[in-house]
Image 1: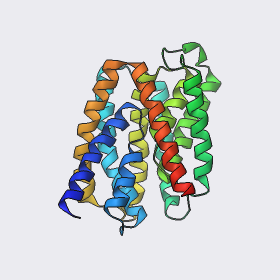
Image 2: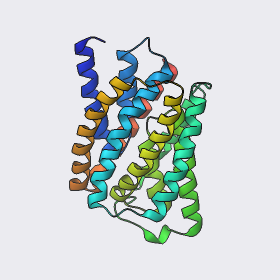
Image 3: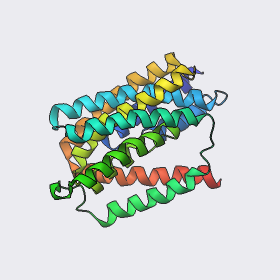
Image 4: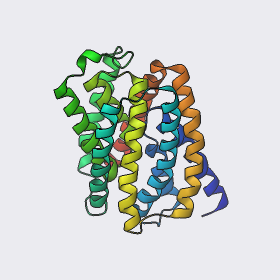
Length: 255
C-alpha cells in the first residue's frame, strides 16, 4: 500500500471512530475505504480487519460514556450476550452468502427508521420509562441482541443506528443513554465477528491495529461531543448517517 493511500486510510479511521462514537455507522466510511485501498484483498479479510479496527474505537467510546452515563445493566447485559452470539453466527455466514438480496430490504428498513426519527422529534429527546414493560424488554433484547448482532456479523455498516433505534423506539430510552448502551452491545458484536474472522485467518493484524489507534482517537472526540451536546445533536447526526447509508447502499445496489 502506498504511503499516501495508507495516510488517507488512517484519517478515515479517525472519522469512522467519531461517527461510531456518536451514533454508530463508522463501517460506512471504513469498509469502503479499505475496499478502495486494498482492491485485491479478499472481502472476508477486509471485513475482519475492519472489525479489528472498529472494536478498539467502540470500546474506547463505551468507556467514555460509562464515566458519564449510568448504564442500564438489565438491558445491556442480556443484549450484549445475545449480540456476541448473533454476530458470530452472521460472520460465519459472511463468506458463504451473498448480501445483495438483503440490501434492498435493509434500505427499506433504513428509510422507515429515518421517517420515524424525523416525524417523531420527541422520540429519544427524553426517556419514557412507561414504555419499559416486560414484553417490550424481551422484544428489545431479542431485536438488538440477536437480530442486530447477526446483521453486524454478516454485513456491518449501520449497526449502531439499528441498536439506538431499537432501544429508543421499543424501550423509550433517550438518545444519549441508548447510544451509551449501544456501544457496549457493539463491542460484543465486533468481538463475536472478529473471533470468527480471526479463526478463519481473515484479519490483517498490522493494518487493523494501526486503524484501531485512529478509531480510538476519533471515538474519544465523538463521545465527548455527544455527551456535551446531548440528545438533539445525536438525533441530527443519526439522520445524516441514515441518509448516507441509504445513498451508499443504493449506489451499490443499482449502479
